[in-house]
Image 1 (cartoon, rainbow, N blue to C red):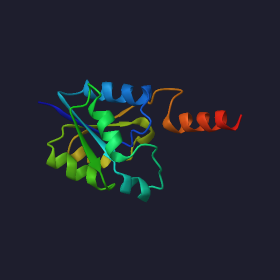
Image 2 (cartoon, one colour):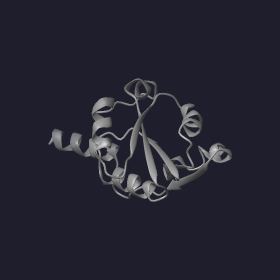
Image 3 (spheres, helix red, strand yellow):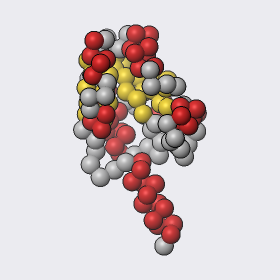
Length: 132
């Protein structure tokens, strides 16, 4: 069984997230989605609309995802690769090169982002509409 993992905040789920999860799932038989905990988001100065528990429930409903785990630290990726016997780490290409050091433990694949959509763009668009 080929095991794949990907990481993200996965707040305000959109087609870009679904595309990443679908493509990541195609690399293996079992996909783990690690989502940033609320505490980790605070460390990153990132504010999510949905709580960790809400985002977890949403991702668990996505058919491409087999398991959802919390991400609490940057350093956790290596621990997760070992703990969950990961064969492939999949990340968006906005992270290209950042996790190459993990190639000693599993294959690292960077996938192109979906053009024209992001959580940041959605939040910006909603704020613009609110101001009108």
